[in-house]
Image 1 (cartoon, helix red, strand yellow):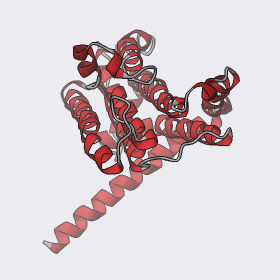
Image 2 (cartoon, helix red, strand yellow):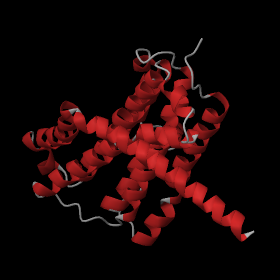
Image 3 (cartoon, rainbow, N blue to C red):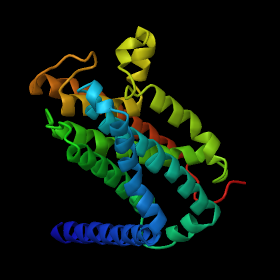
Length: 271
């Protein structure tokens, strides 16, 4: 029994090592593209700079919270979701995914490794944007720093899995611009990063709160500004309790994506 347990642990450790090696190789490919690296750093700086230039931070104390939430949502929608749908489909059409499966890295490890550069860029953009907000004197004291961290991490996992699931109805990398549009447009429009969901009709507001992007925004609002869905200031304990719903939403979307991938994900070009 001890021998079997030790062998299993060694196999798990070896699989993790191979996955990390593949992820490192994928990330190094990104780092060699200086334009992509520069854009990943410049975009959040440009967004914060534009808001600062028009005096947005003088008009409302909640603008900084909205800005960091918007950075997270846009990074998840474009850098993680859209970019990964395109990448997965392109790798599938070029038979790269099929060749990778002949190696010693498992299916989950392959998809995770391919997603590594997008995950890194997403985290970098949010961190750079947050640093820029702090540099211009914005108050991001954080009511509960754990919640935005949970929102960003769970949101990243959910959008990675949803990107893989979206390849099931995306035939080519070019058509990804069309197939990803509904998810991106709906997520951004109903995320609550531009306006509070409470201004929407009740039914639409409840539907919007079930979207992954709105769950991320809600966790950022609870953790950064310490406000609930209605904009009321609440304590840390109440915030943790209310955070259970958006956390459950993100977990549910992740499960939906995993089930879809398990049943329909293609490793070879679509016929």
